[in-house]
Every structure is written in C-alpha cells, then in structure tokens.
Image 1 (cartoon, rainbow, N blue to C red):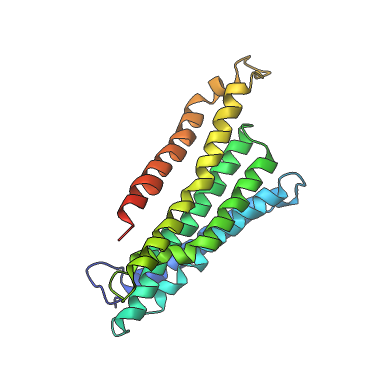
Image 2: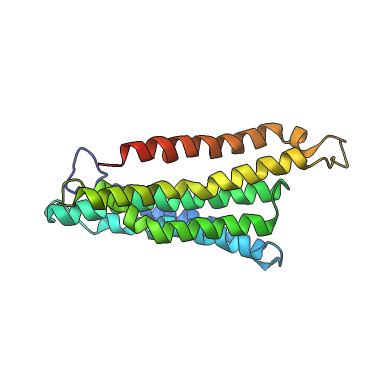
Length: 218
C-alpha cells in the first residue's frame, strides 16, 4: 500500500520497516548511553542526547496516520508534520545535541554551555516549530499572513547550532593549552574534526537559515 502519493512516498510496508529500524537504533543508543547517564557531570547532557534521539522514531509515527483514501487536508497536515516537524525540527534538535556533545568531548565547550544551547534549541523548536509548519500549507486555505509568520518562526531553528559554533570558535582562538602527550595545541591535534564541525554550523546557517528563509515567505 501507499500513503496517497504512490510516486512520492514510501509504501506502507517500508514505512513500518523504517519505524522498526529507528526503534532498534534507539535501543542501541540507550545501551551505549546508560553508563554515561550515571556520571554526575555528564548525566544531563547524556539524557538530553537520548531524549533527542527518542524523538526521531516517536514523531515519525504520524506518517502512519493517513492512507490513500484520507481527506486531502488531513493528508497535507500529517505529511508536512513529517517534512517539517520531523525532518527540520527533531533532526535539527538531534544534530545540535550531537554537535554539542562532540564539542564537549573535544574540550571546546563546557558541559554547562553545551547543555544551555540544547535547552535553547528545544525552547525555540517547541515555541516556534508548530507555528513554523504553517509555511508549508499552501493548498489548504491558509492566508499569506499566517504563512509569513510561520516562515519567520521556522528560520529560528538554526540559531542554537550557530551560537554553539561561534562559542566554540572563540574558545579555540583563546585556548592555548597543549596536549600532555604530543605537545600540540588542541586545535592542531583535532584540526580536521573541528573544521568539519565548524562547517556543519556554517552551512546549516547558510542553507537552512538564509536560503531556507528566503523561499519560505509567500
């Protein structure tokens, strides 16, 4: 079976298979994170990482709520729940948490800073993610004012990852501590890893923040 868009969407069998695979992935993450969540200084950040990962399989389930005979308005609502809230929202949150954890493990930001950025991302998403979905509803009778407001809220989702990248960059410039084993500075030792993470933040801001915002307003 299909969802009503037989040339665009997954068949129902593949949807169920994807959901099962995501749940299995979550179980593997839980087994790996369980020891970390018992550590006092990293337990909160580890728990946030697990919650962000859990949101991915849980909030994919609305894709199973409609079929080929469902009313078009209902289909469009749940379809853009997946396109916007799941892909652009929860994946954005998960990417921010993942980058925050990596920055912390590299010693570029403190656990406190990383946790604050994750909370900021969650607040912006929960506050504006649902409203931001409205910029997709072109064919369900929504007015241009609502779509314009929704596009503004949608553009806010890239702010936390951008702030985290800027904070890490300032930390690299000011930090002069050297590795006890090789004598190199931390930024030299992990140069390519840091460059990759910086590129994630920069291109996320350019793609989702600038170009994504430009195509959203009606």
